Length: 527
Image 1 (tube, rainbow, N blue to C red):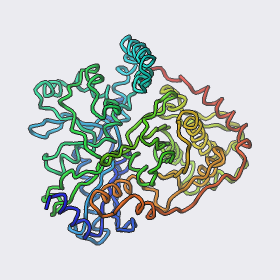
Image 2 (spheres, one colour; image 1 turned 90 degrees about the horizontal axis):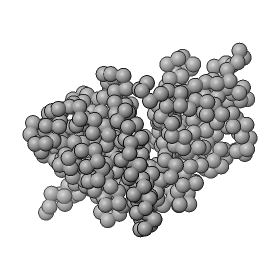
Image 3 (cartoon, rainbow, N blue to C red; image 1 turned 60 degrees about the horizontal axis):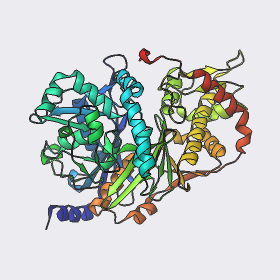
């Protein structure tokens, strides 16, 4: 009997599967039973470092210790032993990476977060440079001759600091140790999933999955491999990339010394793709709206890779055997971060009261808030936009401010939804929501009104953990197929349109005007 066969047999007789999500602010672990009910949980705040202005890092050893601790604590909270765990699925924030010495396993630097801006000057010079203009012209000509979608993507190619590509290029240019190790074929590169897998297996397994690889900006989704063209462009040696495996795959087992028993690692998946799977958005046209620190709208485009025009990003959702599912994604960086900021200013004491505060006034009394602490993404695409309140008056109260802030999140949802409708060549079907901000009934109801669609919110809003667990459980035979998973998903509430979207026209027009006045506020060098 093969090792994989033994793992499946053991999983079928074990009663629990573990899903871990390493998010941008929180590291969570849930232990699920066969009904996908949570039996035990643990969470920790992700400790973020800011060594210089614009630099955002994570300490790999601290993250590793926290990762082990949340698993141990969740299993303990469930009243279980480690040998009762069938397997492990790991979901991680995307675009945060590290490099390390292949021989010693020692990191060359801290994790460089997707939020890090150290490569901003490099990104700007590439986006304004001659090489990119030449790529655009040649790609446009090749598209005209071949009608291949890959040349459409190349013809509108731009770089951002969120992509790994230019941050990795910065590391190779500025950290001599990394450049030297890469030249000697002694350098490993990995996003958080790859590093955790490497640590869990004590260096015996080095890999990533297609969902994480496609989120780096140096992966070619048409060829399903690391892009040799982009790597040459940025002087990144191909030897540093990990092998790419299916999203649910036998990645080996956790070394027995770590938890006392070997636990199969059966899924690695990027967090938004994990949430998509957890929401059971398995069909073309299914839509997931995650509202956490930021907002993420993802549409299942089936086996068709989306060709962007206004900034929606094409991604690999997951690869399971021969099935490859693609997504189109649009995001806004500030949702939960806006509410957190308001709490730190003592505008309210508990997040739960914000919806009531917003409803306690008829409208925001003309006050507009622009949620742009990290610039404005799709469809505005201005990294230099500023966050702002406009229309303040002597009569403005806390309730008006809170209402303006919550309305701004709903307006961003409307902008993103309209972009998806315009860009994606797939009829949209179900819309499902998750993430902490989806618990705010004011935002969700207003979003439903604005887009004139039903929005389904599940009982459990930690979908990235559940998606990772679902993927691992399918690989291990813990669950049989996607039809069984669909039956396990439980709806708490469906928000249905209650007001005509036209009733919001004046407020949204004012808000759009406020957005226009917040654009291009910072200059590129103020990062």
